[in-house]
Image 1 (cartoon, rainbow, N blue to C red):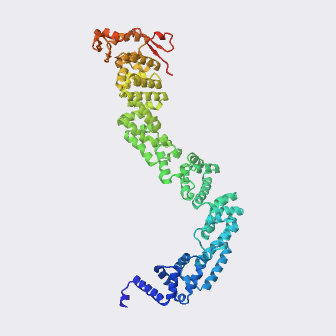
Image 2: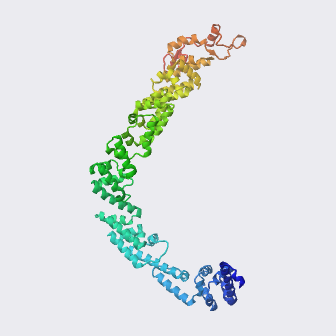
Image 3: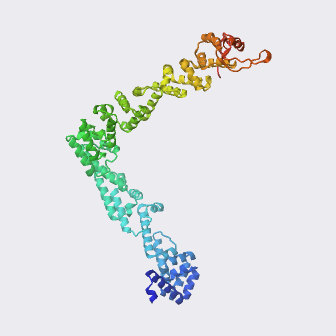
Length: 624
């Protein structure tokens, strides 16, 4: 006894459990042995069952009879599982268990439930009641609405409950009364929204009452309209209810027609989503007061900007009306000014401070009306100012002068006009103070700027330096033609030597005006001269390319003595090599003539279809 007194509650309960199990084993050894061996139970499983079986059931061998009866209905494993889950089964008189099983099966089969006998026998009373209620509801829905098994399964709640069949029938009747339609309409409503049948009576009454109130405004509603209304989810219905209340308020306070209301609602974001008495009416009252009670004026503003009443009365409408008054602008500009955020208003003030502008200058560069109407201007102005500041080396005086000279500059698209065209303008050699040219630049001028920028980058020269000797030439011809000539000269004539091409263009900028056909012909002449061992300087090459045929014939040979000659092996008397040097001067005239033996002074360049082609030393053949 002393030991028991010191035990905690859990320990004492465990001691009592062990004592009970030992007593059962001692008093009913045969029954215990039967249950263990017949159901193949482990010791822990057996103990969990014995502790919950009455002594009477063990004393009169009822447990053995129940186990044998259940084994006639199903497998050993299922019987074992059922006994472990519900040990009280072995306490039921076997004849009563058989009778209860038969009655249950009869009731369930009457509602098309053909559950097996073992399942029916081992159900608890609560489980059986819910099962019978569930099957009764299935049968009622199938009979009343003509649903098939799949449809019934799709709408019945997963968790079984005790339903009143008469309550379900009455609920279906009330749905039909609301719809004022056919049985098929009720079926569609239930399939679309099963909660109509299974929700609480309180919830159903409130839901239908609210929808009937909306139907009052839709007196001409068809059965289809009523079906849509009753199946709306709570959120959608609330929006519908507020929408109709909003329609009624706008029609009453602003004489808005149904057509105009639908137009406004389709473009507004929040209108009709809240109780209009709380949110919309104060805004309408304020606007009517500001416009001296003119319904027409307020209605016109709403049609001009359907989002007018989306905005807060105290944080947007009132402050923007006050701003219009301070700027001395008409109040009807509120439809655009209401769109301005606090950040956008601050941006305009920041621009004034950054460029040290007066109010007049700020209004010239960013007119307040234009600022409120053009969202792109508000969104891009900060990026545009930052970009232009970087291109003017943060010279705020210069930037201010640029914007005052061309106020419309900031109205251009930043991504498609300001940034790309200003970059081209500067890369093509224009000064920063010429940035306003961007406003009126033509497509052709943009192509010219692209071409200049390409050539200056390829020559690795500063745009201002490039304009000093190439500006006039690059502005005359087609940009595409000039780029083709430039690429031809760089790739084929000067073999990718940027420095040599640059020297040639400094001496002969008109080299870029020579047609491609003539460049090809002179390249043939140049290659012939190089095959003789001569290597003209970049300036000589430029002269060859731009000279006329007469000049080429008259000046080519006399100037050859001054060209640098690569080492060329010539068969001379004695088998010695003769080297021709650019420093040899007039002493090497005979050697040059020797090299040019067969290349007559009167060199003739002809095309493939020229009738004097046979007398020419260089013939330009048409490429296939």
